[in-house]
Length: 209
Image: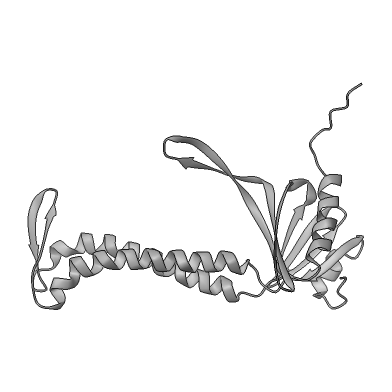
């Protein structure tokens, strides 16, 4: 599980630490997450395309478009398209959102993963010459595993995150996530990480006397 060939910067950073594991992830994000983003982007784009065709369709065949602006009937055509500018920008924004999700999903699907090094006190990620260090005490202990054939994914929830507003419901805390995707020895890596998370748990233990 210990890799001998790792980037020089990573070797230097961990030279004086006890290393539990050093692995190379195949992917930066779980493929299931990427597929989900792509699918949502396709559904979003298909839904928005209905509005694009119904609104702009008549223009493509030389007809006029009839709609209301502030409850005022408006007529627009290719010869008089000023009134189409605002609705066109709004619809275009939704189209860009859908295409962006598809592009991001495809990019994340093929994005190579980085190196992960686990030590006694922290988890270190090295990707594209960028080093991200997360102390074990920042991990909440909530871990999800996904195993697909010979490669598996680990999802770690952190204590940090943000509050998400919900309509007609109380705000929901959404934790930050660290993914280690497409690795061998999934269960062994998870076991080592869980040990360090428990050892560095900042939550005080109540002792009954």
